[in-house]
Amino acid sequence: MKKTIVFLLVLFSAMLVQAQEDSLRANRYVMRSMLFGAGYTNVLDTYLSPLEYKGCEIRILRESMRMTRLMDGNVSSQNILQAYTSYTKNTSGTSYFYTGMLNWSYALHYQFQINERLKILFGPVLDLNAGFVYNPRNSNNPAQAKAYGNIGASGMAIGKFHIGNYPLTARYQVALPLMGIMFSPEYGQSYYEIFSLKHGGKNILFTSLHNNPSLKQMITLDFPIRNTILRVGYLCEIQQAHVNNLKSHIYSHDFMIGFVKNLYLLKGKNKISMTNAFTPYKI
Image 1 (cartoon, rainbow, N blue to C red):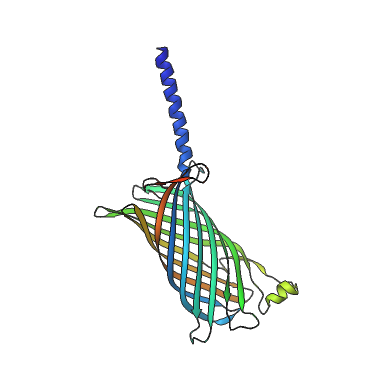
Image 2: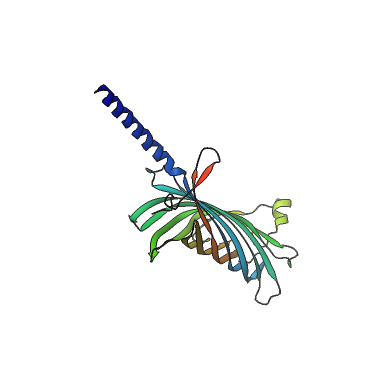
């Protein structure tokens, strides 16, 4: 009897330890993807030119998604880093823009499991942007610096379905900035006046839906080919602002393609590959 009780206590203790380890391990499963894209863009910046410039854009996007311990482990984090550059011309083809932007966003989503094939995610997102627009034909003000950040709302729907016996996973995500700050010169003010002559002005401005109505949308489709998960998608990014009597926008439409890796993070920088059955992206 004593041996039996001891055995049961040891077994119960082992189960408790295992359960604790499993709860800790949940946030070690990571979905990472790398996407490369190209598409069409429309750029306007009245600080440099009153005309719209249209052309091609290339983009690279790295995404990481994992579960956290927040709210009983029902909240996932999403980390996206992307860079894109474009070459655009005005309608007459007499002038052109070079544009380069770097974007980082971090979102926390509460995951609502609707059924075995669908889940809805919703939560806050922090979005930071930096870059430039350059017009080589301008002599006094050839470039415009871009620096702005905002806090907004992010939503996502992830659905699983089959074509025959072939598994597919689709995702639609939208992000809406609600409030933030933006750097901008005043109308007619040069960067020489701002940084060399130290002329004061309203160069750091509050932004919201009234002067910075923007929207990001992304659609992706995951499908396995042997041991590799491929991802194709479409990204629509609308960035626009009207501050200091200056108007600007960057409209991007990119087709994306890349691959997905599901990993389990060990101590330190070690990690091992996992199947699609173990991922915060899983339904």
